[in-house]
Amino acid sequence: MAFLLWEADPRIFLASRSTFSHTFDMAREKHLDLPSYHSASWLPGGHAQTIYPATLFWQRPLHYKREHWITPDLDSIGLDWTEGRAGTPLIVLFHGLEGSSRSHYAVSLFHHAYRKGWRGVVPHFRTCGNVPNRLPRSYHAGDSEEIDWILQRFKKLYPDTPLFAVGYSLGGNALLKWLGEQGEGATQIIHAAAAISAPMDLAACGNTLDIGINRHLYTREFLSTMRKKAQYKLKMSENPFIDWQQVKKVKSLREFDDLVTAPLHGFFGVEDYWKRASSKAVLQHITTPTLIINALNDPFMPAHSLPTVRDVSESVRLIQPREGGHVGFMSGPPPGRLSWLPETLMKFFQYHLPLVR
Image 1: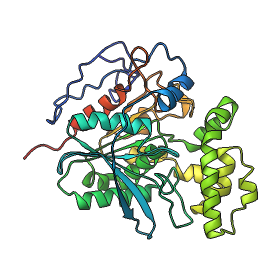
Image 2: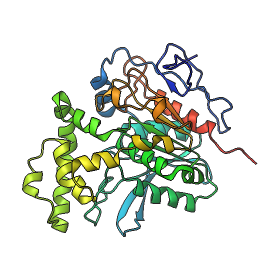
Image 3: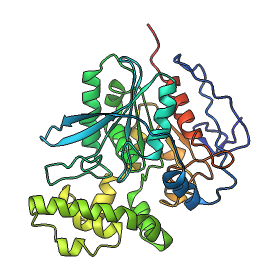
Image 4: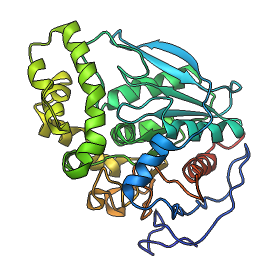
């Protein structure tokens, strides 16, 4: 048995020394025994466990088929599809901040899904995936309206296809916010969902990323592309509420969100944005089977900001390994494997496949 953080509630697990067999097929899983996470002993600490899989670990590239959708407000987004037969289960993946279909977590999950005969698709958020959008707005961590129309369209296009959704980091928070806001309505669209390393308390995450070494390792990299996109948008729209001279000088996510993200998306400054866009307050309203995975040593967010079983509904299962970093979860001897996370997700999704009538 896995070690329980609270023995009375089986919905939240910490890493233990137990192992489970990982065998999958297209049939529905009869028992939901999720594998325990064992970190790579040669990769110590949250920073190494975050940076190595994202930048140094090699994976065989995936071949995607690109599709473009027109948004309800007449903008455009790009979608990257993996190969697969029509009618097989479909995983919709919402990427993280400045992520894409090439992000390490998308590649590792879709390699596993393909071997099981499942399809995958990444609907890129606006300005991502090398698709410049035409409108002044961009994307943000609480954009549940964007999640809604995308999933609604998938359901309309593929009404008989088992549909699952997974969000990583920023995409995970947006997905969880949609699940909480929709309540029972979400169960009519997808069969199950998962959120990986989601910053469900945006203020805690933003403040953590803006201090110490995090500011140099992560925030600086995020801002390097976000500033360029903001400049492009300002040239295109000449937004009178955003001062490019100030934007060029920002050195923190707080400053960027206050000067750009908040005014572009109707928030009254960074504090209003971080509060209203966080998903933690609506986790108790989720009725769709949902798996939330966060490492306790995630350098993007303090462990005390993560939800407990008291913060979530009965439909939510929490897994919080002591290690894993931010969307990392490497295991095995060098050079390591990115297998635990996709295997866990696939097992969870297979358990929630609809019964064959």
